[in-house]
Image (cartoon, rainbow, N blue to C red; front, side, top):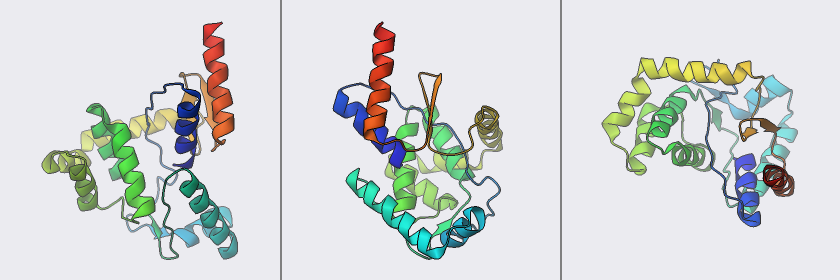
Length: 197
């Protein structure tokens, strides 16, 4: 969320229109259905100490606030399997509303601490955006869509994407990590000037 928000703000500030397309990618594709405690997950995956975890969450919360987004972390917060959410996003994308769905799910997880693996919660988020509940539920349960999303994820993994954010600009320039508004502004300005030349 941080990287996207920085990019969007940079584009707005320098007056460059951008079109965002989100692609499915899971940081933890093997995450169990019941998920894991966030702090314990980070400690096991990255060796993060409890103190470092608190500092990192505070830093993200501060950065989010500066960008107009609320992170509401808690010690009992859980990392969950997000594959159902990716199916819902894929379905919304087919209707031209994938960006909107992504932002709604970011808010559901990071701001309201809702379970992105809970089908009823996902359906509720979709309904809140005006989607039909039954159609959203069918998309989440659709095994053909599941296979499609797995293929899309596989494509990006095969391209060497191993973390987020990873932004592919104009289908050829890869920018990884949250780079900050100034850096994104320079990148966008450079690409616009290069295209004009």
